[in-house]
Length: 440
Ligand code: LLP
Image 1 (cartoon, helix red, strand yellow):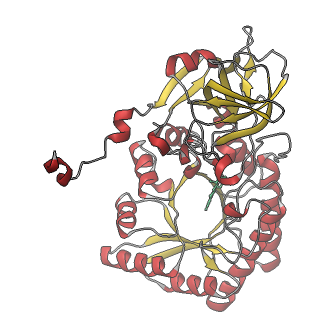
Image 2 (cartoon, rainbow, N blue to C red):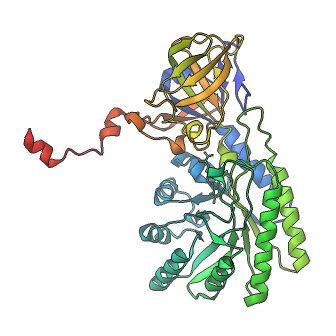
Image 3 (tube, rainbow, N blue to C red):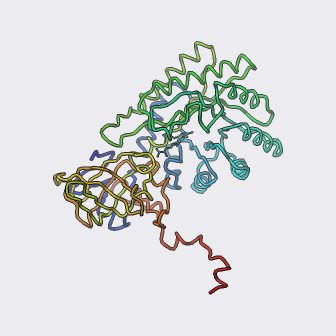
């Protein structure tokens, strides 16, 4: 198993993260447990900021909180000076309760409700990333009613298809997100927002997909955005002050993933933007990005306790853990592939190929197919790295399984940042129909 950040094998032969023995973490906090390497998250934040500093561009790095949105994470991101992208009232409230500076919050989403819009306006967030005409007109109207001028970016689909799983490609023409460039909708939306008295149009945004390992997609998308801005400038004199090229920078899950350094993406994007802007004689805008996965993905490791096993001679050995698709939906949803190790047997020879099954009542609840591990026994702690993004964020209560706890570890200290759900939490929103009570 690849050792990210501060992960290492300690003197006891156990996996250690942030100076904490993971077997002790499992004993103290229970399993499954999401363990986050705080120093690694901070270093990822800094890598983007430092990469931009060398380019001379004004910039904002907005952490896409959908990847992992908790109050502790919002606080950490705030301390690192990043901005924050939220996509729902729930993510917004998490940020507000963490005391995140509201002017650094950007509100995304393809179907924001009126309540969410008002909540964000009341909080005086930095800007809305408007996704479609209905939202554009509604925001215009609400801003007029409130006598406010609201800052907006327009999300556009530049027609770039990222090389990634089809469910997570969002930049292509046939997408539920954004104003389409090719059909002229994007230009029309720019005209509307530019001419509105109630909206302050900052610029345009695109997000071409997720888990992307090449710079080309970002460069092509940036060029298309600049073509669009050039058109808008000539058609009705709009000069953009912000260009947001979204997130999607890839991370390492297994050996076959080949992520680039943050600086390589930033260098390619800034170089292309500078060239294209100067060709057209448009002033350089502020450049914004929205990394989610690449800030937090590597830094998360899930710890499970191994329970039962089923050996089908000559076919397969199943090793079951006390979590599964409830704490990591990605294998079931995207056929995502992960590595694993036995945290209390890090120095033992990996002499068995097994498949890791979750505990949900569903055959598709498999976390890892065919992983090489030392001989596993009940009670061992299985560590699955690179689960920091879209793991806890997409966790669920299938089979009424409570969500795990989350701890941040750093310099030998662990801090609980999300409490483990209890069975009582899981049933706490249920109500028995009055009918049923009467029949008793
Ligand atoms: N900005 C926008 C507008 C986005 O839609 C997304 C992700 C991001 C930024 C952050 O992308 P990242 O840097 O994390 O790749 N649940 C899927 C990923 C869905 C991504 C959706 N949008 C997964 O588990 O792979």
